[in-house]
Image (cartoon, rainbow over the protein chains, first blue to last red):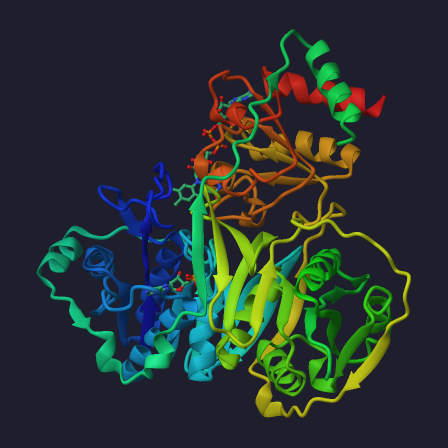
Length: 259
Length: 323
Ligand SMILES: Cc1cc2nc3c(=O)[nH]c(=O)nc-3n(C[C@H](O)[C@H](O)[C@H](O)COP(=O)(O)OP(=O)(O)OC[C@H]3O[C@@H](n4cnc5c(N)ncnc54)[C@H](O)[C@@H]3O)c2cc1C
Ligand SMILES: Nc1ncnc2c1ncn2[C@@H]1O[C@H](COP(=O)(O)O)[C@@H](O)[C@H]1O
């Protein structure tokens, strides 16, 4: 089974972010980067599929040299091949540009299953997996919480989250799945895995070499501004003791017509 | 010359057109005013005349794409049917609610049409062009986006960011569309829908949400929050600490790696207010925090706070609400 996993590096979600003064971007000097949390579920699912069906896992990212550390962490977990597509020459991009590039590379690698995260937690587009599927003309089931591929069949059954419940959905393979939290519990890397990751070389590709139309590199949406959200007014602490505090709270909420 | 159009693609359930779709209808009408285009509804399915009619009470025209193969949702069948109609009618802009379904097929449609998509918008500004606002980096920053060269604009909007203003004064025309679809256009098959067994509203539609954190101490104590939610007609949710402890399933989690909600009222009980939690609820209209630690960061964004033991406060609230 040929499995491809798309991973992305994102700024650690706990840190304070600073917006650059002269462009709609964040300051990226000295901030910690991590693998997109949803991509951890994608890579874990890939490892489980390989345990069941054999085959190999290729992990790809379209990003800066810094992003190689994310690929290394996947090697430490057990991925077989790692490819970084250098993003230096593609400064402006949207999800569609990213998807066209990833889809082309995936096409060259060959695939039975493509796994992505449900969304990246930096820009939260939640688009890339679905776009890759459309570009490759294969099915996609997004935001899955369970993936079942019974032995020796070419059909997958998924649970996907919807408002107020779950959908049980079937599709044939090859297919794209995007991972929602709850799909699995990611493992930790082993010491030998970490040692192996140190020694493994990461393949690098230049987008120019992908035989894409120059038109394909034109983003169709653009960020014009990045700013801090309006600060919420710090509210009031209701001082006193019970039951007065509770009564006062309910009185305020009723007055403001929230209840 | 035919008039330019803005399309709203509707979503419906057993009870009719979804509230999230009505919010988008309001947003579409606002955008239509700025862009001088005509708002038009689009609905796909089979044997759903009544929903098409329901939609046409708010919109002058509704395309009703009807086909037996559309009786169940399939992303690819949706995309194929819409693709043909879009090529034929050439709308200027398409707007859809960013529900799980909207998020599923809309990116495919945008890839097939090779056009721009701005997803999960929380609002827009009408300047020389329209600027769309989105929450990024877990809601810690707000980004403004615009479309570059893109013949068609596709936008999805986060539920509850626009308020539905009901007019229902018109009886729009319903235009039947028969798409050419075959079995080969169906790529996925819904086997079954497992509904949550609760009478409480879904998190994305609830006006009031009562949420519990690690301070709840255990699964059994959520009965307390359920009781409060039921007197208020609200929903129950939780922080990740609760989900990771196995007290509630992940569907209840609010935050960066959970659901994003914006109810009128969010009552946080025993939640510290980590940035990843705030990512999921900081756009609530009113936030109440009940926490025994006066320094808990949740108080920084709460409209009202009570510094006390939640196991004492919540029962009093329930008692007072009931009386
Ligand atoms: C990549 C990543 C993604 C994450 N995604 C999410 C997410 O989607 N959602 C999310 O919620 N978190 C998320 N987190 C976790 C987040 O960082 C916090 O750990 C989590 O939100 C803490 O949950 P909590 O507030 O319930 O628990 P705690 O931080 O432990 O807070 C418990 C609070 O309860 C109070 N308390 C205790 N007992 C009582 C009592 N009897 N009465 C009143 N108050 C009491 C305490 O004072 C304390 O403030 C994520 C973390 C990471 C790294
Ligand atoms: N630059 C990238 N390189 C590799 N994978 C990506 C990239 N951007 C997005 N993805 C994948 O697509 C998923 C959804 O991302 P997004 O559409 O940006 O929210 C991520 O979880 C990744 O699996």
